[in-house]
Amino acid sequence: MSQRGDVSPATLSLAVDDDGVTVDYLDGRRARYRGPIEPVEASVRCAPGKEVHVLVADPSAERGVMVYVNDLTTEGDILESAGVGRVMLGSGESTELVPGVVATVDGHAVVVDADPAVAPGRVFVFEEDEFGERAVELVAG
Image 1: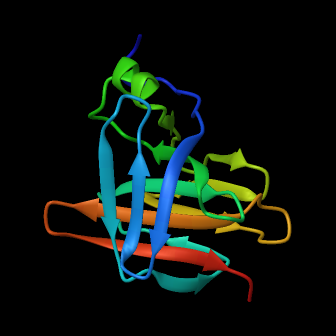
Image 2: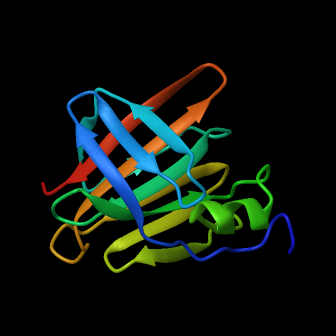
């Protein structure tokens, strides 16, 4: 499989609390996205050069799908075995990750928009690099 191709996500187990989100991958690994999780109304613009991970949880926040946007470092077969999806977008391109959640590349930045009335649950966006991480939840305005 191509290192840079799109990958469909699988449903993953989650635990959400005030200090962040824990994701249990299909391959047995576990990751912790640290908070506090900042509520942001409907849209977030991530800084250029950051890794962007979008997690859409069911209303109970016990299961969900994770999609990496423009990830250039993880092999497709690793993502598939973990259950993580990936979309690759060029500047000016958009795609609907799940109903009501759209990722767009604007220049070098990724913008994630969510319509809470349509999205199937809670929408989290994590942006990170070697200098730090940020966790937001897109909420109704």
